[in-house]
Length: 263
Image (tube, rainbow, N blue to C red; front, side, top):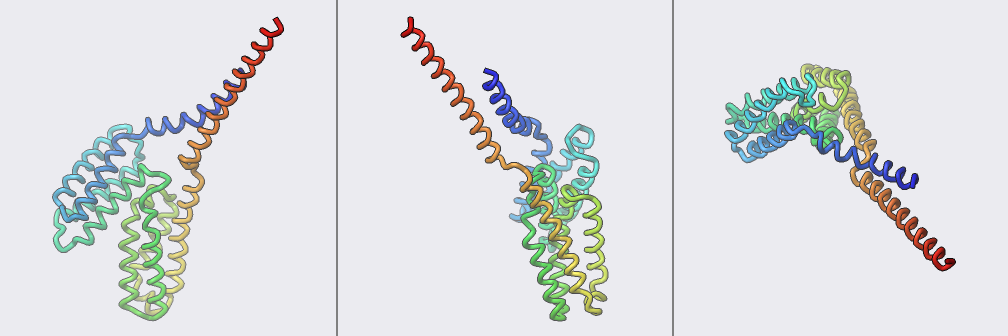
């Protein structure tokens, strides 16, 4: 009997965290994430009024979160508010700035998701575009292609600034600040970097740091037990427990039958 209780206890240890995570999920954060997603869909469709309405709803949610226990740290709240403010600003006059508008709304969408999805955030899906733009930057600098160099750098900057708020949610402050500093240096000194042929080494270093950021996130995801794994383990424990109970019951019935025959 003690063994049965022990098996059930172990089983509960696996099951409880799954339910507690679902029950403790902050409804305001989930609503904020959904609203950001809807705003992005409206933006993609060119329905800017609808996108602005959704972001204003998100703004009200953030205001409520500031005065409630929402699970947001002050730093996270500040990052989200800044990303939301930039998106709202560009949505007020999107004509002729459609690309910038989409980038700003996407940036807020990714940041909102990063708060909710700690181990599988959407922003890591931009790894390939970000690294591809850096590879193009390296090739254009090697070929002394000035127009290509500036175009590739602009593409990288657009991709980087889309994920920058999300990085502040998931990456250490020290690493983000170091990366920001290198990115700003590349942007502000692009002309002299290209002219004195130091571009390749600068780009290579930047590429290395960006790759490290994505690799660290991949490691964190790998370290987390997948839901399927937890379910399979839990299922195995349940089956083992039931099998053990069934065996004990069968053994008990056999002993009862043997005792009756002896009587």
